[in-house]
Amino acid sequence: MAAPMMADEDKETALQKVGNFLTDNVWQYAHIAGAAFLFYEDRLLFACSIAGFVGLLGGCLALEAARIAPTYGERLWRAVVPVCGALAVVFSLGSRLMHITAHASVCAATLVACFGVTALTVRGDKDARLRL
Image (cartoon, rainbow, N blue to C red; front, side, top):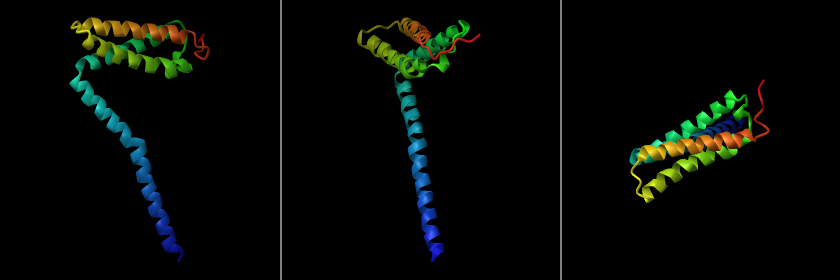
């Protein structure tokens, strides 16, 4: 009698594992696929996203050069990364709505804005420890 009970528990465990896999991993791939399709359809958004990412990395590198460790602080992860993502979307959408066709200028403005947000916000973070 104990053997059939163990088989049922193993089946539930396997079913739970499959469910956990789907909820933990597949949704990430679905979001990546959606973003890839969106970037394919709107290349300005893709360019602004890349410019924002480069600005974010540039701000982090500038802070590292100033002996501040930006990845140790909470402001980078909780504020700066979402703000830079939102800036890329706002710059892209705003340029479309205002009929701005100088896409290189929009991307440059996104880069500078993300660099500035990163440098100014993380610099005031107490958790971004100064390195010696």
